[in-house]
Image 1 (cartoon, one colour):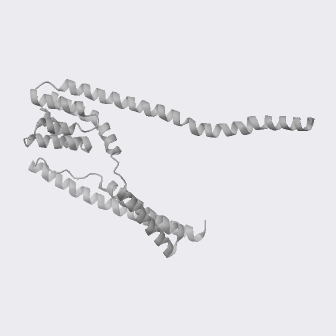
Image 2 (cartoon, helix red, strand yellow; image 1 turned 90 degrees about the horizontal axis):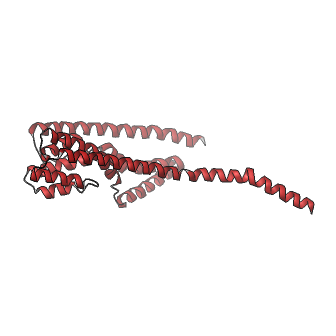
Image 3 (cartoon, rainbow, N blue to C red; image 1 turned 135 degrees about the vertical axis):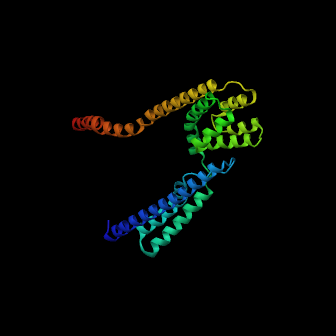
Length: 257
């Protein structure tokens, strides 16, 4: 590592830190404004409003972090004007790749799967306390947040505005794994059937499904971990155990001849 390379590396570190601090400050300011707007909306009791997008800092980092990292990497590795040009070209390529990449909703699906048991428990508690399915969905959606909470709040707003219950709860059932919960709540809202106990059983089923998925992931990890162990153990066994025996036998045969 040359002195110039170390100098560029130590200059890039404060730049990255400053950019991260600025992004954090901007995200904090935007979060404060969203909290004030939400508080004002709650006081005004406005239903069906659009909820603010969460995790602004994470969204900004996911969108502009890779291009900025490409620019800094090019400048650190090459240096000078050529380094900036290489970094800008790399940032342009990374940005184009991010824009053309198909959206991956796996993270949202996993978060929704994690939220479903808690949402079902909260819904069951609200219904057991005397609230209807719409009121329970509204209360849980406003307090829970996330993909499940947002969909519950939207469903409650549609029902409050006179939407068709089957369609509103059907859209909530589009969340992976929530179809049974949506049918139970839709049936309870339409016929008045008791829903606290069925929703509690659904919550237990969600937890059991999560436990089975965790066990499956652990078993898959146990299988995958044997690959690097084999790659490390087999060459060592051949070098220490097999190779000396073969060399000894070959030496004996050659000396005997």
